[in-house]
Length: 117
View 1 (spheres, rainbow, N blue to C red):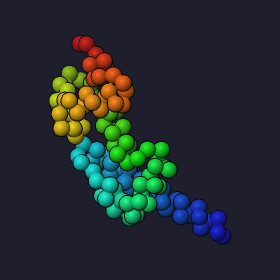
View 2: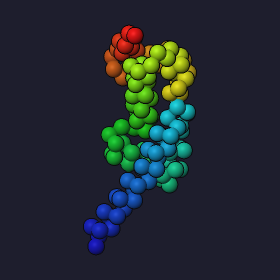
View 3: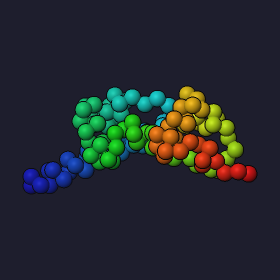
């Protein structure tokens, strides 16, 4: 029965982490604090951070940046939105922040992903 207990605890933990993931997907374009995510998951900040990294292989901040990057990449490839407009949509301050994020994440600047129309 100890095994069952551990399995149900793990299942509950995953369920709680996915509450935070759902929140991240809903609000990735706004500032999200670690405290908020921990609170949504009903976990301490430390336990949330450690569990999130174990479950998803990324820290919550990296997870959020990855979502922002993917949304920005989609917009770059499928729209004619300016870099500033894309930055606004994904919750970055400006086009420079977007360029830095792209370079850090992919090693290339946004212009490398822009399709010509």
